[in-house]
Length: 130
Image 1 (cartoon, helix red, strand yellow):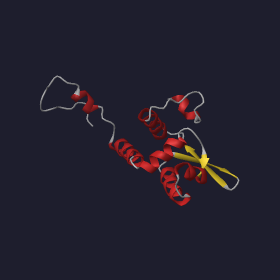
Image 2: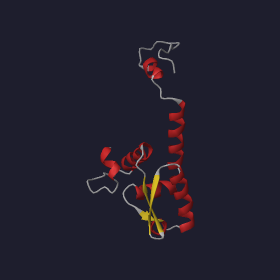
Image 3: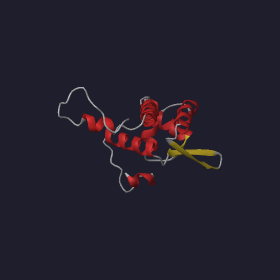
Image 4: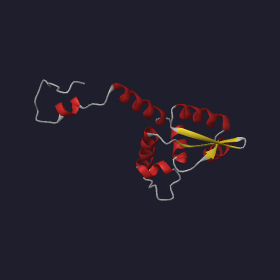
């Protein structure tokens, strides 16, 4: 956006300054994609669990009373989006929240929405930077 936006009406608000400092379109698209991911209740449940733990598909499925293939489908989407990280342990793949800006935002949204408070026992070390 240009550094000086000329608004048609001067209402004495901060709109002109705000309009000039809008983030770029790529940033808005990226955040829109993140919000679309968490708008699915199953993925939100998975993220709720993985914000504070790390586990395998089988345990996540059991915790949510879902089949492993159904959980795997959502985990794949979340991993491809960059919200989840994986770690192989033997034959199992363990999932947890990724250490990214978007994942930290999702963590904050989940904590605020569900009124959770990440304590010093919070699983994910990246959350220390919140």
